[in-house]
Length: 262
Image 1 (cartoon, helix red, strand yellow):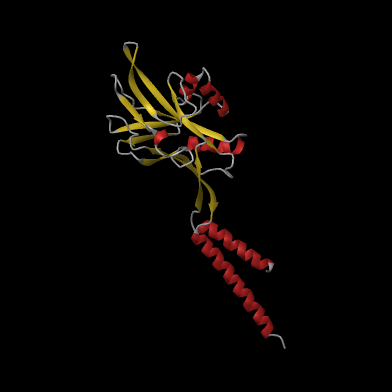
Image 2 (cartoon, one colour):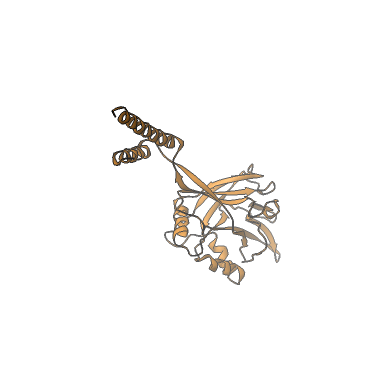
């Protein structure tokens, strides 16, 4: 191929990427590395993968108290090849996962502020469990903000729920991909619509999630990242057509030269 032909191919490639339209993006689905819950008094069961989230009113020494549970989800991003362009948290709510008299409960996803995440794990396994609980429901360190807020309906049972994560989450995900030596990324879940007041009241989601017949690697709580760019079919078609035309032009040129020979 001559220099002129190479330049023509390059020009077609550049034009196709500019004018044909947007490119499609690949997706990567990442299961949870770890997940579970922490109670407001700091209790945590390391072997329990239940990610129940919410509160109930219980008896405590002749009076009642609100016992709140917050969930956590940890992912390993160390093998992700490049930055993500969008992120979705997909979570399964079991058949008996929604427990509330209200038509919906609002789930808020918050960054885990303690870094590296090994320190968060250390909190959960020691006397600082209440600190871990607070970390799952707060975003006090600037410029942190919540990753998402999503209304879970009372009809969202035995169903997968897709929760898009915002730009704040995407920034932290890409920071983890680019700079974290371990590649751990995680967030906490809490309900912001808790209104229990008398013994027996309960407002929780994801109840019995460790007994749903699905494990951490079976897709019941995953992070879906939009990632590597690939040309869309229309772009590929244009590129291949251009290369074919240039190839035919080269053949016709060779035949013409041969026809001019004595």
